[in-house]
Image (tube, rainbow, N blue to C red):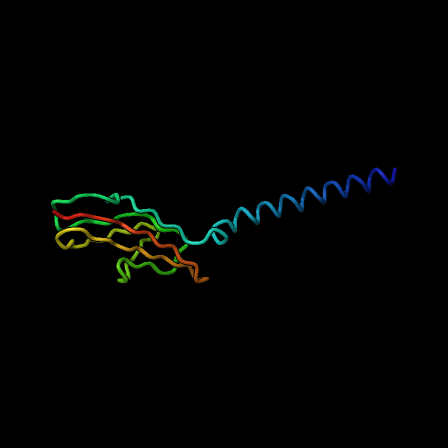
Length: 114
């Protein structure tokens, strides 16, 4: 009888440890993955007849973000929207984001102004 109770306690203790460990890993996924950036507009390779464009997207888990080495700002939900004047011809825009641990994500955007 005592051996059965001991096995039950060990089983439930292991289940509890697995649940707590799984939840901890789930909550730390953003810290583990590092910064993420997605550019929603414009798409890379876009040809524009307008000189003024708006670069839009979402950034997660960042402490700093810059577009062409110029700091830009994000709102509380991680959305950024920045206007740029394109020079005539082919341009490469670089979006860099880093988290507080120094991990960095770089996205490039190739645009053509005609």
